Length: 286
Length: 253
Figure 1 (cartoon, helix red, strand yellow):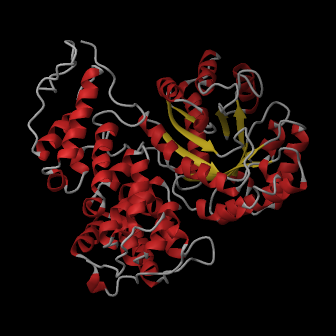
Figure 2 (cartoon, rainbow over the protein chains, first blue to last red; figure 1 turned 180 degrees about the horizontal axis):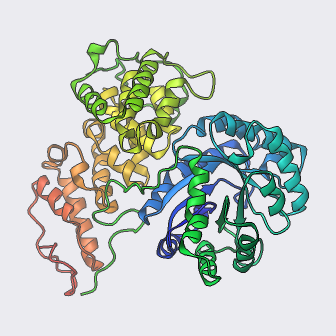
Figure 3 (tube, each protein chain N blue to C red; figure 1 turned 90 degrees about the horizontal axis):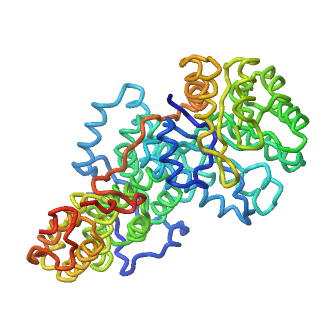
């Protein structure tokens, strides 16, 4: 089973996770920029984070045979902090980078005027840079948030078929689908979606334009949820091709809209004697 | 070789990238293109598809025509071309294309520092590869030192090229060699290794200590270590007494 996790925050994960993900079949990930848990206080903090998503993290992923791309943006929560919002001026020079496959996560958190402004500006940036957009939907007041999101997408220069609406569930999938957007589902241990509900949603709405992600981060989450959904689909009687469409071909098609997806894992120049993540060759048993 | 007239006695600090004074102009004429760069260009022309080749020609013209100063917008046009090289020409040609673009643009130290600082790992690697073609003095050493501080083997490998061989001071050069051994970068990557290692007793001491530490831990000593030690002129290590009897390999001999 080949798996593309289209939304996972690997910066917050360990090399054990990379190893387990590879063993589970994960060969590609997209890491959206997001809130770090601790509020940032300046654009400089974003810059270091973006640099890491374009430098160190793909290197780490490559050590484990996983292709790593990212989406960059000012996230919804910090769009409300005037200390952070100037990062919007820096984004254009990042959005031209080879490894950036979308603008994201953008969207709503508390549905404030500042979030309206940041979302509209970044949908425009996506259109200007030939990139699709990854749009987070809010945890609180979700359906209202989805409707406001879709309104802004309709008013934007970015066509809905270049927009992935994420963190959908049973109450929001229909309207997002009718709008013509791509449909993202985050599968979590306790919150958001779970494997069985994901299977039921797929049975009802079909696999077209559906992406399943673990959205694993620094909170309680599971980077193997994509595989677990694949297993649940198989158990429910879905065939190999169906699973491949949802877990591989759909994310490839969506992020491929950027024209920047490279799924061959670039090998580092030198690995002959261990490397900087593996911290040297292990002690050999006699 | 093109060169610029800066011969700063002191490498500029990390903040030098913020200055906007162009110290060096772009390559003065097509005749100034070094043979190695011309060969690279010819090879690329042969390898690239028609679309990619046309894109490259246009991008090189933009790079050669730009003014070396801080752009008014977020990026000057040739810097956008520099960033998108991988997807325009194919990731396998990105390094070569970026090297040509840098050569054509001939950025001064301030611009070069900015390109590096604002670059992805792949873009930073291209800047490091370009240093011996672009900078004759030690002004770009802070970029090499930055790359050597990372644990990204792509950057470490690019940092120990001919520019470092010529300009890196003895202490930092020795640490660079040791870092290659630590991170698994082949010492074949280290430019000028034989010349700089020759009769370097301090490097030999560091290598012997490292071998000792590895042996004490019951870990194999990298084969490359023995090679570099040999280049220093110091006799090969005998079996280290502290090596446990279960020493993993015969590499210590």
